[in-house]
Length: 337
Image (cartoon, rainbow, N blue to C red; front, side, top):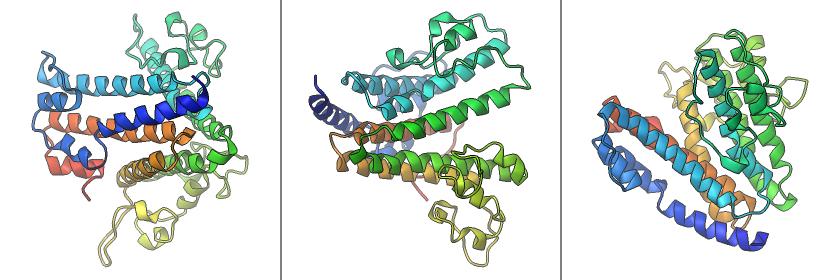
């Protein structure tokens, strides 16, 4: 079908999927079930697999992820030529798969590890296992043509993360001019905040120096300072004291930080920021989906909404497996704060 017809069909189809999803007010129901078997039935509506309880959480997470990816591929299939930004979002799984393949080979695996195959949209040839050069041959990841040593793995993983973020950022520029601003609000802000979260984790958990952290951020320019469109906000917060709220209070994204009460001890919480970002992006994506029908914004916002749903399903499954109470699961998912 032509692009206009495809866009109309995709908007209707994607809207129907969201109506059945655990989004908005329905998200809370994921955390109100008491057993993993109940969660399976709630999410998938079919027979619960006959497996030990400790394996059911993993099966729930795996099936939820594969369902999400399959649904997105089906939507992309409606277009003869999908927008590059939609492809870049989906190809996140190629980057993750390559990391898993590398780790598996390092551990002497004889069979291809469990991957998320994105079919014809993939950049990689998984049938070439176990040859890394053949798996990546002819793709933007062709540089990954040898098995890194364990000491090199961190650098290879960082290069993959950097390439993915830059490819996603660049894909936004290819969106039609009239739709680009809206897409940038979602994708651009998400990438900026991912840099911030990573910088904060390195600062708080690993006690890295500013110079060390800068080497692990993704920049668009060679200046590597606060003027960079992608990493500028992350550079800015490196100068903030982790236990001084006044440093953070005027930051652009201060509304996403863990609450501060005057007179009480406070310290910035990377985990809280990560969950706040996930929740905030989800809320914005829900607005974008209905605000810009028949545009690239539909698939981009749908992907992000369903990513949040997937994260919540994972949280619920892991919480039940570890016997975490409902209130703590909801707090971790960011729906009750």
